[in-house]
Length: 237
Image 1 (cartoon, helix red, strand yellow):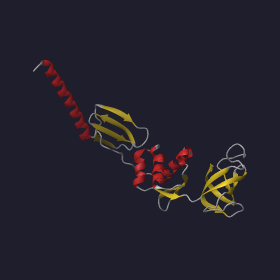
Image 2: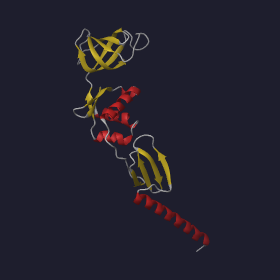
Image 3: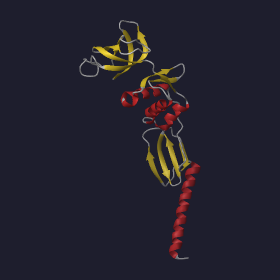
Image 4: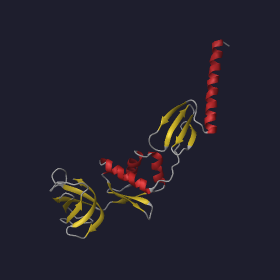
């Protein structure tokens, strides 16, 4: 055997031995491999992953550690998530992503059922899945999202409390509208007043007399003249 070939085989054998020992100690003792590339995660439940030649070592934010073969799927276990936390994340999302939440009407905690109730104007399975994915995959990671789905923590409802109207009066904190079409809550030409989320002088934004708007509210109608509602969202048509 030539000397160069012998050296090559020795070196190759040593490398295979090192990889084997490194893989063995990582897999058996749930350690990070010595030969690795580390990837840090800013969101979700995985703190970092050490990618080895044959195994991956995961370190979760709850200090759970797991070593798996390369290519195997893994998700950190998730501690119980509070309904308040889920509700707050929905509110934060719809407050900062107007274009992605046009179909959204309202959300609240149903303490009796222990679920978050979310009202969608167009409520179907595709829109439900799209809403959950958009809200939670961007902020919380796949583990958080799967926990919500697996525990059925969100209940979707049709938002029946929507109507179109024309603004007939605009004050600092309130607007009054005239209903354009018969609907589940009002009849055409009914007058309805509502508090707006930000002050207006009736000239510098869409709270202008004559503008047509789409009003989404929580269903409560105060028997006054004109009727008064608690508005959830007002959209310019």
